Image 1: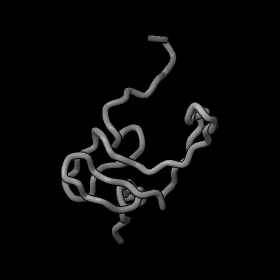
Image 2: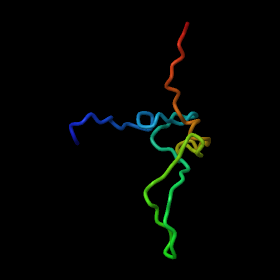
Image 3: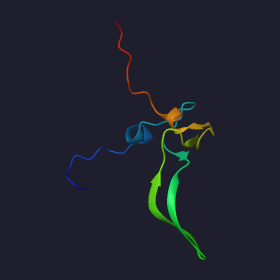
Image 4: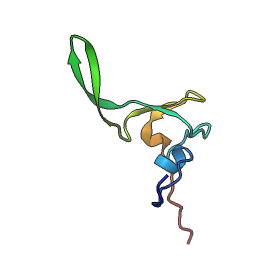
Length: 82
């Protein structure tokens, strides 16, 4: 491991600010992605790039809750009390 200031990877909360809104699980989520692939008579081979956003379909692998990736975002902004 390098001596640079790397953020420790604990779960999806710390890496992507995401967790299941129903059960709170943040180890694995299934997200629908768009990717570029080469199509040939031998099949397909992805080119390594992929994309997903807040509107992408997302599901919890623990409780099977389904929604959009935006629904799995953790609200990190605290309300300011007057």
